[in-house]
Image 1 (cartoon, one colour):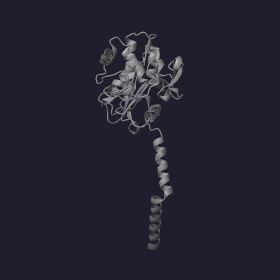
Image 2: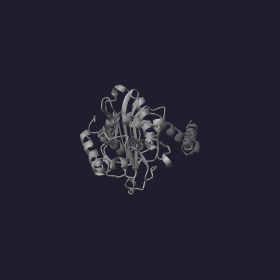
Image 3: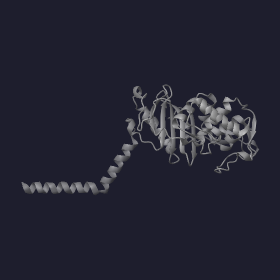
Image 4: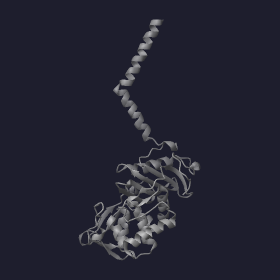
Length: 310
């Protein structure tokens, strides 16, 4: 009997060794983990996002339903252009007035590329569309430069608007977001999105998959695409969208979307990799789709935010 038991232990040891060192076994383990991470997990503590900061807000109740590091003050890059649009529209500027790109609108800070040559002319509305859809920095600069009092007065108006909205940790230095001193918290950006989505023209423009602008030679129409590909995706019902990127800010995305009949604000900041922010947005949508709607008025993440409402 003792001999049989010894043989049994030897056999079990051999099988254990084989399972640990077998390439097939390792591949099976890798496949299991890939499958596990690809699934949507309804446990809020298990939603893993690539963005360093994330905030998800139920717009109807104003309750935070998911938060990841929402308190730090971040550079916000071209998300700035939502505030630019608010200042233009709140001051009732003439949208049919023709503006001209000048050398002053050329980016000498980061030397970013632009579809707009010096001398390009378009209406203020067309510049607004280019700034919000294609994130055209020269368009945003021209909008500020043609404000009464020029760029300085425009930036002052941006900061005044932020204070009026209760964006207490926000500050603006330019209209494009190229300046890393344009900063806000995720909470402040949720306020900005909540305000901007209620402006019909901003809603209309930011949800367009593309815009045609008369910026080619001789006024030829050129098609510019939305910097957020999700606006053209049939799986999304988006009410507002704006992307942003500079090195200091990382890849950023703010959205308002209706998910399971609930208007929802999504803020994603400092994501790494060009497509990571869009992947995170899809993760958030899938996560919300499997949640118990009766419990979504509670903060669902670690670390917890200081307040459960905006």
